[in-house]
Image: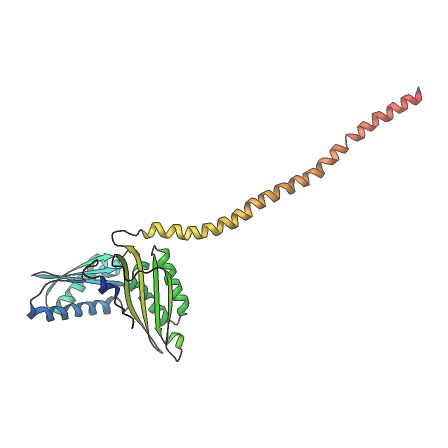
Length: 285
């Protein structure tokens, strides 16, 4: 039997922080836990399950004596905030009516969505709903994450892939993913694509390097794309341009050589003429 565990739960409390940070007595613990579940479910339905999609990847909840602090991590902060913060105020009022407590909402932007496992899984699910080819989707998701600076990606899709009658699972993997290394920052998320022929489960692992070593996705993504294009372009251009330049220049020289020969022969005619004149002079003598 394989002993598999969630990479997030495996590292929570050691290298990762809790997504709900609060303390409660035994009598209130169950009520607070249900309130957190309601808040997360409401935010997911509001921003991720109906258009316009705001791509909220994570919700952090912190409680104090007087209020509940809700932090949203999203790739589209403008959709959550709205014009002049109108959407945030509306969200705060709805959450306060839901759990009957004072709430403050903060929004944090996700700078690189390709490095967030939840957003990658949701994007794959949306494309599967549109009946796109699952192998191509998985491969493109892995390549986008690697181009963004990830050190390893693994995507598993399981279910009636492409409408097949027998369910199966397929894996796409790039790079390395050290699941048993607690010092490794491995992001993990699951999502479900509910298609007309059944539900397809999606699991995504993204290895971002060790904790404390920050990834610079903008700096790493451009050299990789440019490196691949640069190698191909330099190989093709380097092979074509210099050879083309060299081949053209000798052709010009060769073409110029025959043009230069007639003038060389032309002076030979005047050289012969004096000889004829000399011969005539000899005969005259």
